[in-house]
Length: 199
Image 1 (cartoon, rainbow, N blue to C red):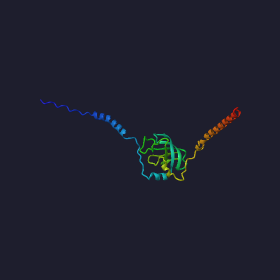
Image 2: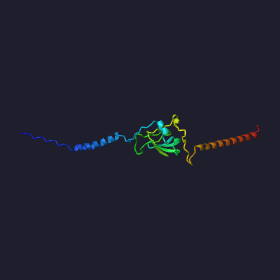
Image 3: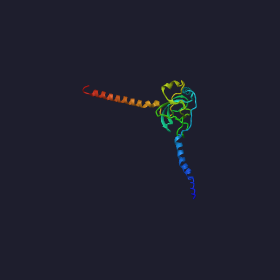
Image 4: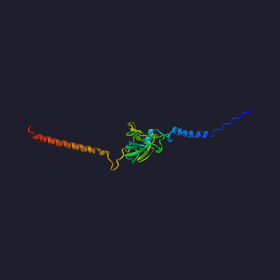
């Protein structure tokens, strides 16, 4: 007697769909985690930093007094203007080409209370743009030889703002008060000595 053929197993058509539904999101997640969220940017080649500093339209020394946006945006007190005009005493320097990006490949971050020689690539007069492609760097005295002879110097203090030159005024009052106290004390001692029976 001839045996009946075994039934052929039917392919499970649901398995590929289930596999795709499970593996697909995992692959997408892995791509997101492995590819950093960094905006593309690059530095164009140019001359030396010294040439850039000597020829840049805006160059100034400033001290970072405040930071924001992951230390990419600095509030800067301008100490000495080498090139440029109408630069106020306080400016903002944005060290990224894209504030909306989590990061870019040319982001410059700043350090609080550090003095920099700023060579921004744009902006002004109170907000400048910068990045790691510029000649901006922490300031040191070995850079002083690059300062132009006709540099504008420290910015003028705005009307109504506190003038650093006036900071000696309270000291003058203090000295005057001490002098008055010494005179009064000396007069009192001299008077007491005159009336003393041992005088």
